[in-house]
Image (cartoon, rainbow over all chains, first blue to last red; front, top):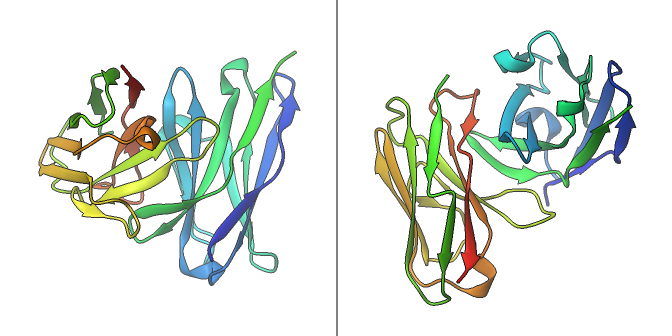
Length: 117
Length: 108
């Protein structure tokens, strides 16, 4: 069965970067895009961007352009989302999700990132 | 960017009641709309896509409708496990998505 397992919670200081991983299993890794979604109490669910594991191409939301980088490692079926120049309002739960076509139908368990001095 | 607006923000209902949640897009998105359910401490769960197509395994009491800019999610008879937050999401601008702010269903 399709499964996405994300890395554990992180605590970062303002200005730092965080790199969250998402390991996929149960399907052919290069067949489907993986998306990242941020969730905060204030902003709700925000689409951050996506990566095509086949070629590594990415598409980022304008809000996160210049601060987010998504990469993949096909040898371990893992995608990574790195967010830089962290601010306190970046404190959030981050999710990865597989898009089979247009459907975000499998999600990781979430990774809590806390930004605090 | 397409802005999705959900109403109401919170809905207090009793088990067994029929409930309708609304979602409006800032411009036409045809039928390219999905609905998700999220319970505390859990990831969102896809219920409906293409405005009205129910995901395999989702109970028939969940139904979606609408096209263009106005959409609804109807739960025909609320069960205790349905109390959660519901989000709409447009996939008209695939692969770029946007979500509504959510409607919280709480027990009356």
